[in-house]
Image (cartoon, rainbow, N blue to C red; front, top):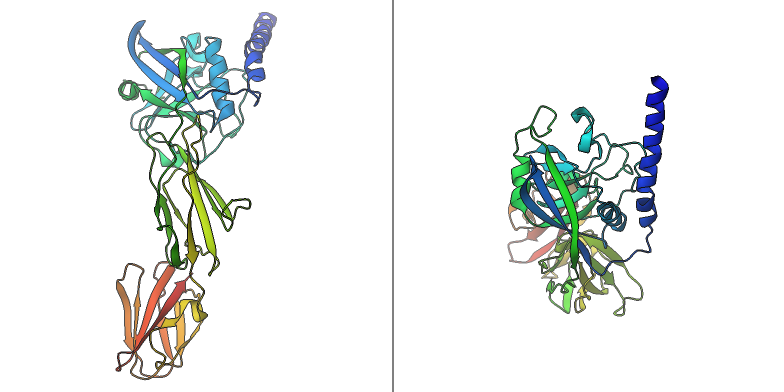
Length: 390
């Protein structure tokens, strides 16, 4: 009896290996798509169609996961597998071959011999309707199982491989997530899937329009919170930003992929320099052309971290240390001078009148970042600069 079981298991492993051999070959990176492959997921309960969920995958973002899913659909692998794990306000998970006929306590465990797909972690977010690869603690353990987010789940971002999204039928994702379930999150009534390829979305996205800073902006102060901003595109998944000191972008100073339509350059670019920037859109299947190029010039650095004055009569203070953990010593101050410190929104957070030529400014406990100080005297002369709390 033991030998018979062993033989059956051995034959099963061989069969599974043969079944997946085409999928392993199909993961070759040379495979190309004309756009985003689209699939229909028909869901059935008690052999009655419950609803249709349509998805499109992102070969420009996760090519290996896309090809794995596509090749398995081509082998009707997913048909009669179940959405075996459903959690409301989280996600629905399916695609385990054990869920065809195996005991329910094996659903989600996968089978020996399934090929794995290496992680393709990107900045693509786990938003409502996003399709992502299920895996174990090993980041490169994804196989056939996938999940669809019912709600946005930021804690998954950068830890799981997003490779598609729902284009219609999100209401059925909601219904499945809310289905009655046992203590292990298995639906009390099996929910089967039947997956069919239905075409390709070959839409090419539009390039975003750049918003801020205005083109040819001068004296951009990167010691403050300065942002590059652009318009969102309806099908944009990831935006690619290039910053260069060369209008042809032959050399790139900064290159960034981001799911957002804003990027902070507050870390500080060198002053007195002209920068060019552009952005394009990745919709998962195609890249847009780049936006028209804009340029800006950064402000020349000031002594004592951004010190500047509107009068040559007021004494120029010496500030040490700056940056600081919160305590700043101002020396060479006129007795009677008024010292104000504001945050970048303009809110006054500190104010004092100098009783000596040296003044200690204590900002400990304040948030890290840049603050603006202003020193004024009775003659309406003023000087201002920056304090950096690190």
